[in-house]
Length: 413
Image 1 (tube, rainbow, N blue to C red):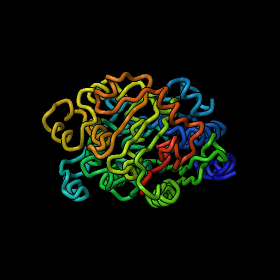
Image 2: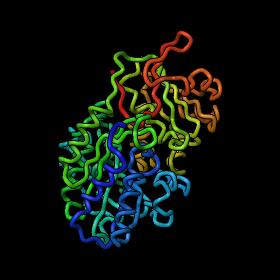
Image 3: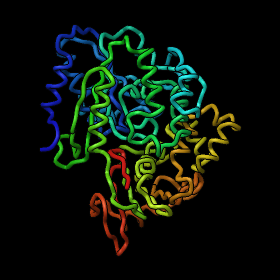
């Protein structure tokens, strides 16, 4: 059996609670879109141990801009341990308080002059309420298109953040260029979060539980192997997790594939807002003039909420320069910069073709946002995930590169 076991995790969680006098705790796990993070398992272990110690426990998933978890998703994610009524829904538009600003001169310095406006720091009001003796932020460190390496304080400032900071940080990442960011622990966006952590929440009783996972049928957690768990406070903890992820979650293709096929788990991915990890995580590998085919049986819309969905349908994935220009001239894009950043991230800028095989979206919808539409049944018959192996395959004389879950890594030549 590879990776850490369930008993290993329980022991580490017990150690993190040792010698703590705790009345009330807020657990901040990832949401269902991080199904393979092991965050749900770790949260459930914390929940049970804390209840045994007589603590009152609230659970608030780091939703960010995502849809709230359904009752079924809560049951699956936490293994039936956390009751639905104990799960608090974070509202990124209305349920936050502003703590201050990251100064404009600092933003200008770390962004190399790309941005110079102060960035508001907003978090869910519960985090700074003073009601909790302990706040445990749980999440996966993995290559990420906005911040470089996901998690650590991102879980607080984006997962539990407000519209202004989410929009500003995402737009900074998009303008700086995701190719310069992905897979790096030190980036302009991470510097913004570091500043906010030091100046606005360092006094709070927060500890981080950071996971590094890989896909493995031999793993202890439903096809996922938990390779590392780092619990504590301080940026050095994040650096250790990032270094392990860089070793395990960077996949070298050896040469640039002309065709990449990605499967999106229908339970985990229900929008292109989420599913475009297939675009982000493969773009460093795909050959110029190549093609990305996304098998998306569960994708039924574009945005995670109605306004973002409307904006994506209106402007489409039409390239970085066009969206940057429109974000200055169009009021709805200016007011929803996270959506504008997503449109930039989800475009190949004409370098390769992006094709969606999504049975719950019509041809008109897929082509309307700038992607190629593929018939799902025909595509799944040709590229059958049950017969493909991770990596290089030859199908009827065609060489393709297959990825079963793009959320677990970063692919490059």
